[in-house]
Image (tube, rainbow, N blue to C red):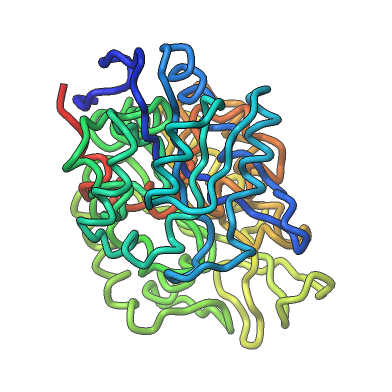
Length: 393
């Protein structure tokens, strides 16, 4: 990565403004149900604090309050959890800009300060220059460690970089290192696993990675548009009618490039998508009235045979409805198999990360991206505004 990181600058006696991704899930009582994203920022936070900073001012968004103050989207519970994780008090402020915020920061005894939800102000997502300038006014240096929002040109990701020296935190650096190498310089054989419900969500990834990889494995709902493009019957399975021709052209392109695209050869089917529905294994052709909800045992074997020799694997999208235990066997089998390989395994955030975590295999993957949308755009070969804006080495 040719961007400056926190290791490239002197932090001593500086006020550091840091963009984190504390967009964490909460229950109805506003208890945090998964603090993975908070824990992921700790190495950067601790390094900054050890660097002798005056103050570390953290900012983030939570949920989609659409520019209004919405109590359930307050970051106050994050401040409480962060205090526990750091073992030192975190001062929580009830806004992110304004004179009272500045006064509170300058008079604070605490070293760590968390600002209220950035998206309580519409100017955040609008990347309004004056709002960005106000955010920047409390810091001497800006650190971006929020890969999950790096694909958005918001005031707190791109706007503030116009007013402060801007560098990457460790989490952002790690994301770019793994995803960047996978895109630019993967160890071969390089296999891509794509799942999820829609072909349309993955077109950019396929177009960018098809020339670079050796094989693409396709499962999940998106597989059935490809099977339909091959003339197979898919029953009532997920289909994007308007993407059949695109699926055909992708299959043709793969053939021209001498790349293999693997699709399910057997499927777990039901008549209605229900956790208690009676399921049946069928072959490539799915009978009328049946819905494919997971890959079958022959497909698992087929996919594993391709994966076993891979040196780099990028996986984005589950291969079945993993949220329902009855239809999670395919996704779980692939996840478990990846942990047995001598390969770099990169999990592309979102549902795939949720699946790997559900199966308690997260510690056995090389890298799990913290940004679903951002990782997808990076794998599409797009430039991420929050990364592009950082200072060059």
